[in-house]
Image 1 (spheres, rainbow, N blue to C red):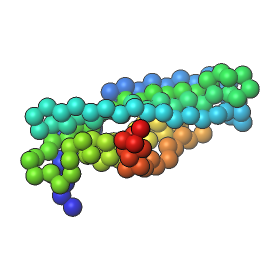
Image 2 (cartoon, rainbow, N blue to C red):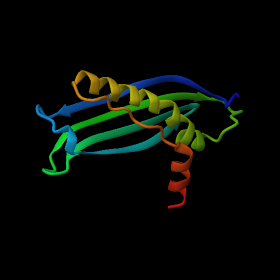
Image 3 (tube, one colour):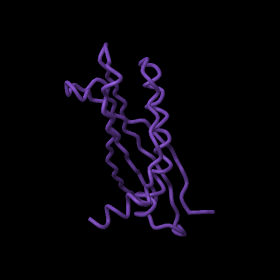
Amino acid sequence: METGFEIVNILLLESNFRREPLVSFENLVKNLSFNMGYSQKSNLLNVVIETSWEEKNKNTQLVEIEAKIKMVGVFRYNDKTSVKVEEFAKVNAPAIIFPFIREQLANLSLKAGIPLILLQPINFVRLSNESENK
């Protein structure tokens, strides 16, 4: 189904990863957080997602594994979009960008010699609705 939006590019803006030399894999508490923002200029929409991942030792409170990944999706749209630009920026664009973030984090975890970090799917429709109700 045509939305009136076209993917121009998806770019990695920032990628940081850190791990402790000795990780206690049994005692880690995992936490995912992310921020989204967007801007538009003429018929271009930029959607930025910044994702942070950390695994903290529940006994020592030491962060043993952490990552930060920031990506931008650049989209072109026309006057005949079937989806409002704001809705596309909050729902559709993140759903397009997020698999690239998932892949980046998975690759970093493999190269770091730790168990695969595989981010689970996110319901961006529900997330958008929840943020509107706040």
